[in-house]
Image (cartoon, rainbow, N blue to C red):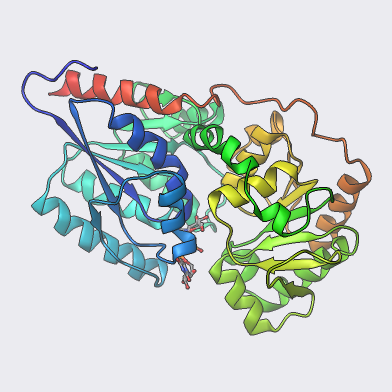
Length: 385
Ligand code: UD1
């Protein structure tokens, strides 16, 4: 057991808001709770609120019930971010932590970091330094500003260290610790293998691909979404493409009335097609990824998970803020042209072995990132209190 701080416990408030925060914060909460000198408080902003976008991740990642839920819900970027600032600001007035820990690049991340920085509460940022160099992505603005406000910056890959140095962040604040998402993945792999979804779909012995799409730039314009899904439907003539759809994407598909997409209503998949399904739980999704022939995505985290698993990934974006997944991993950034995506996907299908053998794992993606972070948080506390 850790030494107990001579005066009082370190009260750390960790923030989750959106789905991708959950798998980063869960292993950290578990590790923080091992230390008697630390009081770990969990705040959910409520940015994501559907069962399938939030609670199911709490359950499967064994995350404690949040101590506070700010219940902000959806809105424009401005109203959502502003509402989180107001509600989190009120919370820290009543229950002031010694440190605020934020993860990733979502609106909840920047909003809570801003409140803490203004309150002179030290901010720790998990997944710092990633840059797409594309400011049309809302997440890029969130990343740059969160890093500028943070006191402790935890990076997942070397590019993060370089980017932060280029932005003039003092090297003493930056710690290369590896990838917390991979901590969750390593812990969940066995259970994910047992996931029943693949059997329910009748895909244990069949080849299939997985698709995720949710970026506004890919899904908010009806014409573009139609062209993209028409191209993917051509791939889906060869193998089933499973498409667990984000609520934003599902709504836009419903509005556009797209014929390229078939809706899965349970049971075995009878034929190759582009099968849209509800958002998958964490374990079901990992279970699907593990055996996929190929993954097409515009997500950030999925690029990392496929690299770790050695599954070929085609990223349907012009850039990636996670270059190590390309330089060492299985990721290929194919751009945003549907025909190019089609061409690249067919190439993967024709060379099925590519990218599958013995995955190369980026440095420190070893499932031990949470203990590294907690060690640094404790040292910081001891030297600043
Ligand atoms: C957010 C993150 C994005 C991350 C993604 C993962 C920002 C800027 N973006 O995008 O980086 O990759 O989460 O999912 O923070 N909705 C529901 N139920 C929910 C949540 C959302 O129906 O539980 C719908 C709402 O109609 C909402 C829309 O999805 O308007 C978008 O949600 P929002 O939180 O604004 O951003 P995401 O697109 O999910």
